[in-house]
Length: 340
Ligand code: ADP
Ligand code: MG
Image (tube, rainbow, N blue to C red; front, top):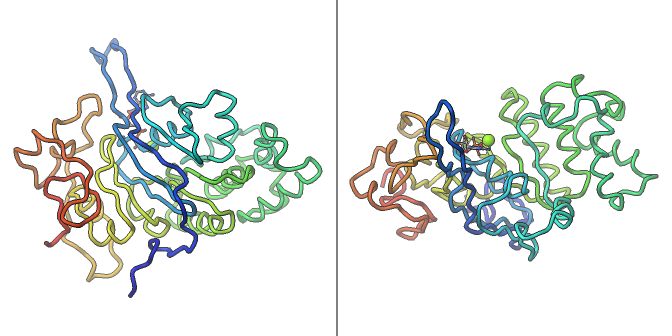
């Protein structure tokens, strides 16, 4: 089989660089607490760089607490970055004033994990979907708004009648569809999906992912798709970044990450994914313990305390995220494909 030029889904539309994130850092300063004792600095996102191309889906995967949601929120400036740049069409979002940032948000939307928490329970579905037009009245002329709401609802698999109902009258999967319709209301270029299916039943997850994939081509969207499990982003990602304790530890194309992963953390995450084809099943690597505190991360390689390959060097020297031995970028001193 020929290598897909753009990833698993082979979408034809992956184009020029659209969004360039450079050396992004988000440290939360936490004060001395009455119970916890000393305060400190939570290194939630610690020097992350990547480029998102037009029409592309970049999957970002890592266990809970690795900094994925913080990364998403900082890119939209729902929380302020500590340092770094995020350049969208030549503009560094982190330098924009409040008014300019509001305008930029039209191009950059987010879908959250919990559609219930992110949808106002007192509003009807129609009000939720059209709310962004109050801020951007020019996007859809007033006379066309009703029809556009119905179009968007139909497009995401809901009905015209649903426009008058309230969020609590829907299932979790349907509520996520409402959130997707709303995210499309402003014709964005980038949609950041922060674990959009993690709260849904497995049977519903695939339907929502399929919907996101369909509307991607139709609306010309680029996605940053966050998940804690490599299986979730398997079918939608062109490239995948694996995140651990605030850092990207491996970044590659679909094929590089799923077929030739070089970082022990990626290999462990992947071995936890049930393989359909028995020939694909690798020896299961058990990932022991939990993600250490980002207030006091391990010296050197942050993954070393859970790594089956760790040696003295790993505690002393932090491995950079660089390509080794002709392979894709991986932040491990011993980065090597499994079985080599
Ligand atoms: P993920 O989405 O990968 O689960 P998060 O970005 O939510 O990770 O959290 C990353 C780290 O930052 C965690 O240790 C979390 O406790 C911490 N964190 C998140 N928000 C705050 C905050 N407002 N203040 C202090 N620490 C925070
Ligand atoms: Mg999260």
